[in-house]
Image (cartoon, rainbow, N blue to C red; front, side, top):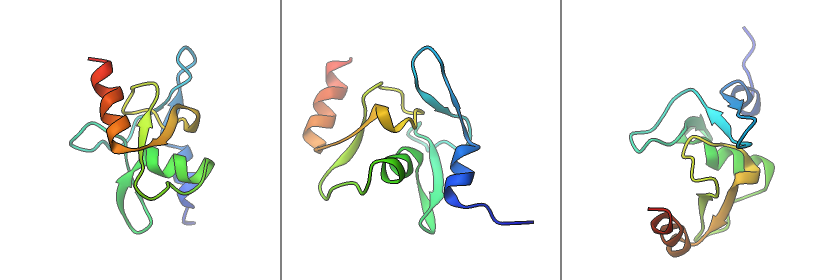
Length: 95
């Protein structure tokens, strides 16, 4: 059996949702409810893989905010690198 690349494995683990545009992860989930994905030799978050693959490295001191507020979304168009303060403020704004 041939080993699949990280991108090939990633692309088999989400389904596009036509109304929202979200790419909904349907495989592993973390205890916090985020999409889990093993890459770079360790467990990680699928949204981080998506951002890094499609947009580039996550800048130092930034974290990835889901603009759609869906923790299982891995659509890079719905992801933005922001400071922790901004990410927390945006989260509270939606309560």
